[in-house]
Amino acid sequence: MKLIMLGAPGAGKGTQAKMIAEKYDIPHISTGDLFRYNMSSGTELGKQVKAYIDKGQLVPDDVTVAMLMDRIGQEDCRKGYVLDGFPRTIQQAEALDDALQKEGTAVDMVIDIEVDDQSIVERMSGRRTCPGCGATYHIVHNAPREEGVCDKCGEKLVSRADDAPETVQNRLNVYHEQTQPLISYYNEQGILKEIDGTMKMDAVFGQITAFIDAM
Ligand code: AP5
Ligand code: MG
Ligand code: ZN
Figure 1 (cartoon, protein in one colour):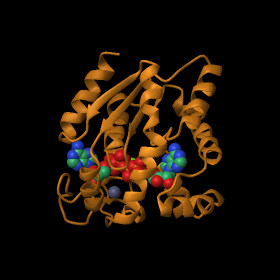
Figure 2: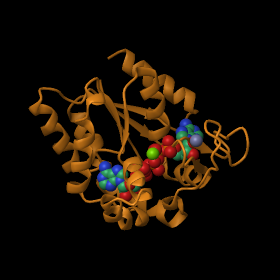
Figure 3: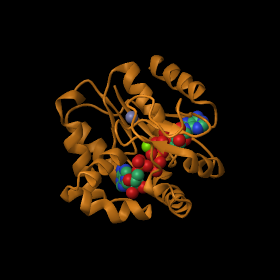
C-alpha cells in the first residue's frame, strides 16, 4: 500500500499520516521530518537545506528526490508506506512515478486534505512539537495533558522555527504556486481522494480509513 498525503502546510498531513502508519503498520515518511532530523544532527545535508527551510522555500528537487529515493529503498518500505510532504512539485511526482514504474508498481492513493488559508494560520501558531519523539500537539485542538510537556515521553514541547507568521505566509504562497498543481496531476490518474480537513481530527481519520478500506 503506497499512499501520499497532499495538503497545505498545517493541513494535518503529519497528524493523519502518523495514525495511518500505526493502523496499517506501514512506515510514515515525512521529508520535512527527515530534513529537520538532519539539521538538528548537523549533517552535511542538514547544512545544505537549512536556509531554504528557514525561509519557507522548497529544498531543490534533486536533493529532495535523492533523499526520498534512498528512504523508500529501505527494507521496511517493501510493504508500502505513507508519504507526507512529498511530492511537492510536478517534477518530484514524475520522479516518483518513474521510479515505481521501473519496479512494476505505482502509487495507490493520494489523500488531499483541504483546509482554507485562514484556518492554517491559526493552526500553525498553536502547534507544538516534541523534539524527543516527534509527537505533534495543538494548544487548543489537541492539547497535551500537562501544558508544554509531551504526553508520550515527557520532553519539553517547542514551536517549529518555520511556524513564525511571516514564514507561514510564505509557505502558503509556495504551496499554491508549486504544490497545488499536483491535485489535477493525480486527479487525472484517477487516484485522488479529497477530504475536508477542517473537521475534527477523528472525523478526518474516519474518512481516510473508509477510503483505504474500500480500496
Ligand atoms: P513539512 O515538515 O512537510 O511542513 P509542511 O508541509 O509545511 O506541513 P506541516 O508539517 O507544517 O503541516 P502538516 O500538514 O503536517 O500538519 P500537522 O499535522 O502538523 O516541510 C517543512 C519544510 O521542509 C518545507 O517548507 C520545505 O522547505 C521543506 N520540504 C519538505 N518536503 C519537501 C519537498 N518534498 N520538497 C522540497 N522541500 C521540502 O498539523 C498542524 C497543526 O494543526 C498541529 O498543531 C495539529 O495538532 C493541528 N491539527 C491537525 N489536524 C487538525 C484538525 N483536524 N483540527 C484542528 N487542528 C488540527
Ligand atoms: Mg508535517
Ligand atoms: Zn515526545
